[in-house]
Structure formats: structure tokens, C-alpha cells
Length: 332
Figure 1 (tube, rainbow, N blue to C red):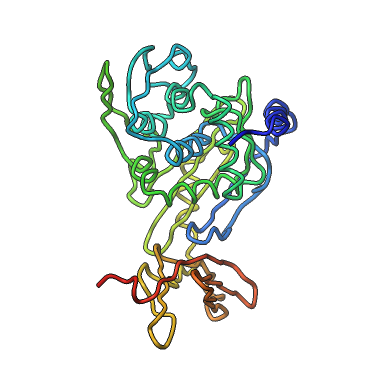
Figure 2 (tube, rainbow, N blue to C red; figure 1 turned 180 degrees about the vertical axis):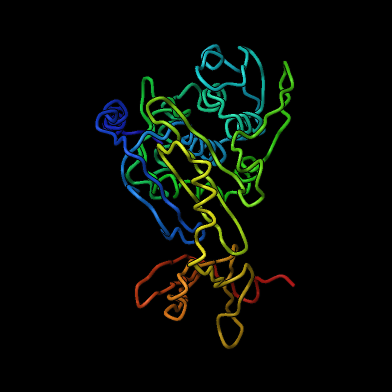
């Protein structure tokens, strides 16, 4: 598809002008991953520098657009990437998948450069288009690493939680991001990557996460915490005690009840068993205990799809499109 030159100019202009006016306060958010319901937060829509947590978007952009088994040849520019690195060498050959492990476990900026073709316009454009598509409306990304010496990656605690929720529903992403360690083999050397997110490596309830730090952004941390029916995304930006904060927050939602509305499966929608609802992942709603008796849900059937709406006192708190099929398409 031919790109509009005017749109390209506007896009590039936005990348070069976003550095001014970003917020330097701290912010945090906790959401329930299934529904993205906000459970708690502060300054959740303040635009902030997000450092290496931007690599979550780099990873999911790569997974959705490229062959992970393709072998990449490392360029000189890749090998010269500053900051966190796995010390890739010019001319070294390594698969995209191994670069993704380096990206997510070791936060390697040289891997980010290689995956993005040295921050090519096409890759950064794909990153920003995906961000818009999934609802990150207050975010702009200028590079694949999160470095902010020359360009800026600006987002919000809310947008980063939406990104983490979206990315972790991808099985390939989750397999990579939750690994405690990984052995990578390239054309030159074998390397062992140990996950930098110490809560993931030390506590079973922390499934995956991503660290970030620059002198301008200060500490940034994303975590996915699961326990029983609870599935939380926690994001902190500019919090110097983020490890303890994430642990404390993850265990502080005893006033919520995590109600499972539907399990994965196939459900009859009609009395004659002609139409069936297809649920590919469990639907779990986070509710305060005093809200439980005020919840109801409805399923609206259309020609070849359906919507489930969850209401709390007549206010929609969650909706999701679900596939449907007729009995002739169900294999026994």
C-alpha cells in the first residue's frame, strides 16, 4: 500500500516534537487484565517517559509482523547501540526469536536495533499504528529501545497497562516474556539470558514483566500478577521503590471479588441448539464485594458473531465480541 507523503511528514514531525512538556511526576495504575477495568491509580493519564518498557511494544510489533525464525545479520549500527546490551557483533547471525528473548529478558538495546532495522521508519510506524489500534491514545514512540537521549517515547501508566494486557494475550509473547532464563545460540556464540524482572524470577504469582530505567524517566516497571481468579497488570513510572510497591499492591485487593463469568468453551445460545457461543478465554470480572449483587450480563446475537455486555447498576463495565457457530461446524 502506497503511503501518503503528507501523513508521513506529519508523523515524523510528531516524533521530533514530543520531547517538550512531558510530566515528571510519579504515576501508577492497577487494572484487571481480562476486562481492563481500572482498580486503582494515580496520575494515570500523565504523559511520561517510559524507558525500556517501550520494548513491550517492540516485541509485540515484531511478533505480529515478522517471521520469528528468520535469521538476522547484525549491522555495525546494531553493535554500537548504547546502554543495556548483549554485545552483538557486526556480521553475527541470530534469529528474531532469540533477539526477542534478549529484548524482553535482558532489555538489550542492540537487539532492539536489530529487530527494528536500526529504528527504520517502517518499523516505528508499525509500532505507533499498533499503539493506536489497541487504544493507546496518549502515546508516541520514536524508537524501539526506549532510550531518550535523542528521541522520546512518551506514554501513560494507563496506556502501558493497556499495552501489557494486549501483549500478554499473545501466546508467543507470553512464552518469551515469562521465561526465567533462555540459552541463545548465534553464528558466533551461545549466551544465557537471565530475566531482569526479579519478581518474576522469585515469586510464582508474578507471571511476566518488564523493567525500564533512564536518567530522565527514572524507574519504570510493568508486572503481570496472577493468583486464583485474579489477573492484574501493575504499572509504575518514576517510583524508586517499585519492587516493593508492586508486591504490596498485588496483595492489597482483598476488597475485590474476581467473578468468573464464562470459562473457555462452546455454549448453546438457542433453545433448539442450533447456535453456539465460542469463548476462547475465560472472562473474569473484578468487583468489590458490595458490587457483586448489582451485576448482570447480557449476550446479544448477530448473524455471525455476538457481544457479551456486563452491567454494574445499568452501567456497562465490560464488553467483548465473541464468535458464534452453528451445530454443523462443531466437531465431535
